[in-house]
Length: 209
Image 1 (cartoon, rainbow, N blue to C red):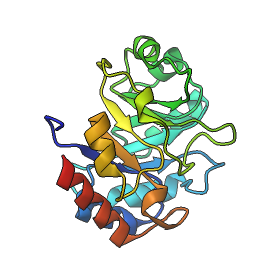
Image 2: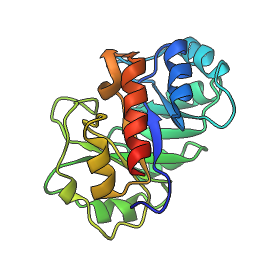
Image 3: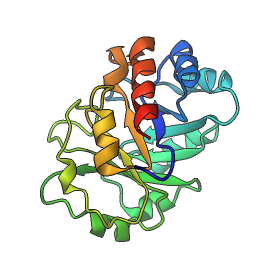
Image 4: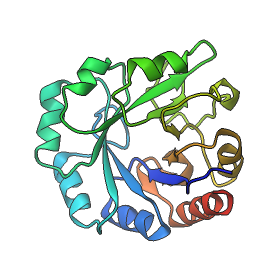
């Protein structure tokens, strides 16, 4: 049993109604994707409108993939962002140039050395562990082998990759992550969330953590 309540981030929010429904269901954070190749991409204007509706104590995560520093700064100077998610091939030095807390996404495959990543990204608030794909930086909808996660990791783990209401309980029991991150598993279509799926997911998390 995780000694702390497992936090939840619902990522890929593109609509105000979905953001508010995620919060109503109990999400701790929402993720806004600033990556034009993603079907869940939002513009700065969309992001501003979504963030403006959020109540207190809900974290806003801005997701970037191999973005230039000026692109990131253009977003965080105009959108209220609490933490940045680097989901590409960014180095620790590149992450640290942005003067906001950050966490780093690692796409896990059998030869991934997560303990080395902990050292490399020692300044990160957490490591987000996602499923490796040759064709995408995330949002694959596939689960990776959770046994690849070392038991002696010290940095908070945010577990992503193919989570659903049906498997998140097992994921929490096995990995004991600080948080779980879901996007496609609570959607009607890419970028459009399903209120019932979000509610069911949150209920599964609460039942386990």
